[in-house]
Length: 105
Length: 156
Image (cartoon, rainbow over all chains, first blue to last red):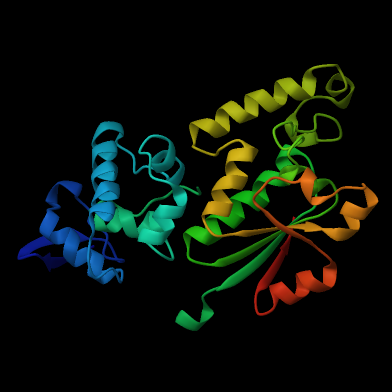
């Protein structure tokens, strides 16, 4: 377990920099986490994904899968891959302050 | 470590049962989720996974499949395969594994390319019209190796 400073606040993260406590997350942190995964600017389309992920996580207690983002969140899979290239589930979860997704799909 | 990362895979799906098709699709989807380039090659009975009229009718084999824990003599009863298939589909849906047609669309939208095997297409007298819209093209083995260059090849 490690800690690091994001947007002026010290938070606990895992070995890959995923927040351990989703409640630590702020929107300012999301911008810094996005830069970590190579996304320089979060657009409204990115925020739609982040907001859905956090809302769904709060309701279900689970990080939504790509399929759930498509079917329940109305986010087309193609768009998800465009917004978060080379690893949408992991990147979006990281930016959203959620842990690393553990599922296979 | 960085150089060891797999960058490209080709996955061959050669079987037409539910349990023959899913592992390849899950591995293809999982590869795309890691940013790995994916080519999916459907051959022999595996072609059913991308055939418009067949892809939503894929079943699990209840005969000659000891791990399903149904004696083969019972497995031949009418409706047995459909029963086992529907039970399995329900469990998969719970963990968000989609039905095959939706899964094929998903891996395609995720950026995987889907190819149909020419030898099988010729053998079964099929044409591009028989395949779902996500199918890139019908290709021969030589072309398969060409598009697989520089990557790993997985046969399922």
